[in-house]
Length: 311
Image 1 (spheres, rainbow, N blue to C red):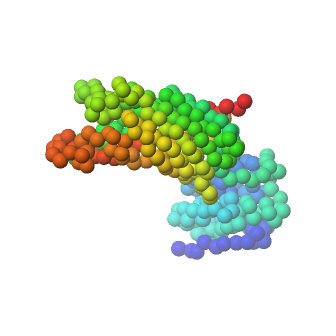
Image 2: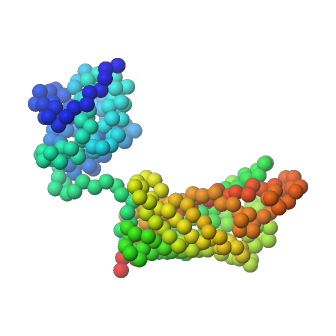
Image 3: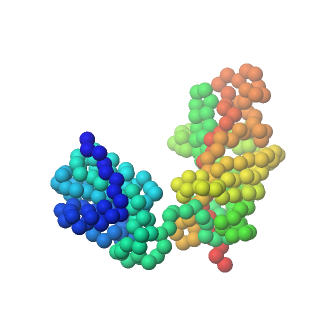
C-alpha cells in the first residue's frame, strides 16, 4: 500500500498548477466549505457515512491525484486519507496545515463568509440566566438485583441556572424532582407495574407521601479548563436532599447551546441510595434477604432543557 504524502503550502500551490487532472478535496462539513475554502477545492465531508460513496462518484479513477485538507490541527484530513487509501485510491497527498495554515499565510479563499473569523465549536454559554423546561426534562434511572432489573424515569418539576459573573464563569442554581412522577419503562405493559410503583413510593423506598419532592441545590457549576463541546464541559457540585437526608454530590456535566436561546444539560452518575437512607434490600443493613436483595447503586442519567431569560 502506497504511503500517504504530507505536503507544504508551496506544494499545494504547485499541485493546483501541475495537476489539472487532480482533485483538491476539502473534507470539512458542507456548510463550512460554503463559507470558506481554498479556490479550486471540492467539498466532501469526511464525517458523513456516504463519504466514500461520494468520493467514488466525484473521482472514479483510483489513480487520479488527490490532495486532502481539513481545518488544520485536526484529525479530519488524516482520517479521510486513511479511508480513501482503504477504498483503493493510490495517489493521495495530505495538507496537514489545512485551512488554518492557508488563511494565516494570507492566501486567497473563496466562499460566502471568507472575512468572518474561524471559530471552533466551544462549550461556552450565551446567557446569564436559564429557566427549566419541565415538560422536556427528565431523569432516567436503572437498578437491579441478582434476578431482576428495572429502569424508568423521574419527572422534574422546576429549576434554574444562574451565572452571576457572565455565562463563561461559575454558575449556580437548583433542581426540584417530583417523586410522585416515578415511572417504570420495562414494566409498561405488565400487570406488576402498579405494584412496583407503589413499592417505590412506599416507606420501603422513597416515602413519597411524606417527601413528595427531592431537591438539588447547585452550589457550583464551573467550566472545566480545556473542555470540548463533545465532552463534559462543567463540574457540578451541590447538595442533594432525599427523604430527610442532605449530602454533597458532584459530577461532570455537558452543557450545550441549542437554537432559540435554549440550553441542554446532561450528566450521568452512580447514586448510592443507602447514603440518603434508602436502605430496603441492602446487604449493608440486612443479613438474610433472599430474592429481596437490591443493589445499593442506582444509575442516573439526567437530561434537562432550559430556556434563556434574555431580558
